[in-house]
Image (cartoon, rainbow, N blue to C red; front, side, top):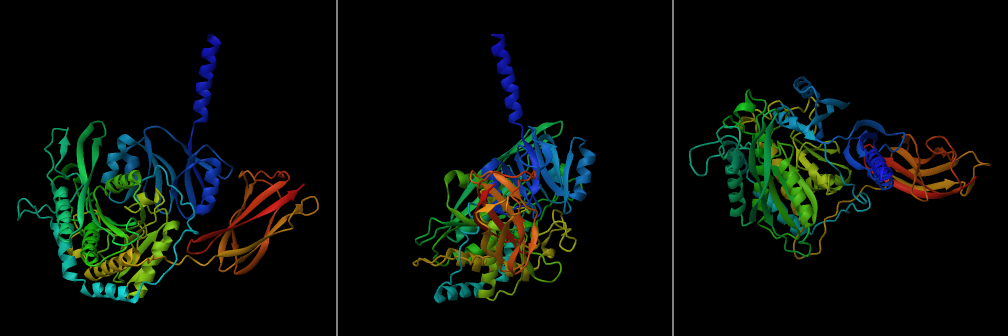
Length: 587
């Protein structure tokens, strides 16, 4: 019996050790290379930048740097460097794991999370897992041209867009007039100011400023004949040393414009958050129930754009279904969009793309520029905006960006379930001093900050792009943006078969259509990772300078057998293509 108990004890210890997981940093790979690694090592992808990826797993290879051991009740957060100093001063238990591009990655116990809501700049919680698309290049749709009569219908809509109507909606959201008491203005849409609120700290309950805005948004959609519903979810507010302070029921507003064509089961989401915050205001943490948080650009401008787009798109018959979703809780770690993502995932909704509108109303530099940002799988949507702007002569300075690290708005939860999603915004960097907007999250984000011409360009781009994506009803039309021309092709591996006792190495010869960063990965016939090269530069034309010496990452010769050589080429726009070939090794 004692032996049995001892054996069970040893088994439990061994199992616990085997189950130990780490947060690891690995060099950034293309989605395709990450898929190959994930198939082999079964890790969770947690975060990506252009330079590295963070994964959760056991230590998998010599190229993985251990940042931390995963611990219960702790989360990871990304915040601007200037705000990290405040966190470290207030919370001794916080731990810096990585610094990059003006941001820091920290580890923090969940009881301290509420203090992050009151930081003066953006902060994001690291996703639990990001699903990789199965084939982001092969499934990227191709460009088609809509029928000319349909294009003329879209042009007619664009001619009808009204700047005063758009600005009036921004004004209505900023002032947030009480629907129950006309003449009383909340001038805030903070997410905790809701009807259904329970306070446990003996303080007065909040008013219903945020829910009042939700009701007004719903009434606008209903006036255009859209089917409207509220998607409710719970949020708990806690404080260090005080426990739970309150429980709040927040609401997303969902308005559906049903498609009338053969592809009506396919859904595009047009999203944006309607809640606001003024965490830069003195005593915000204590007085959020009464302080103004006008949120004119962030994000009354985005919601006004969404509502006006719904008004005009509801006048035409579309092939696909459009859902307009106004999220609450964005300023509290994307609470509303994360909840809605879980909902559509559980229901199996066929969402094929997301356009998120966040801050499209202020042009500080006078350039009338809009930033369209997506991850690698979403670049076809990014380029769809570019195509549409050219097709309909929308004179906007579009800044296209591939940046999977930008997880600070409501597009990013959809990346986590491999749904292409883009953000349209007046900025795409939170650390670049030429883009940093000092007034956001303050009482100074007011109507005077709004640049109406920029808002109108965002509205034109939204209406035309959504109309093109949805397509006309009555036709089997599919809007399919053209994927990039292949970056790499014609991979030749020689000699093949190869006797490494007679030849020093295997040469990989390939053709590049444009300059690219190249990386070679070797796997065995059982998909075991054997070798990954350091990235190297490749030029236009034939490239044959790389040779594999038949060794693994440790420098040991591999056994005879069949191996797969994968060559990934990534261009300056961060588009990646992969080619593969097999080689037979004889030792």
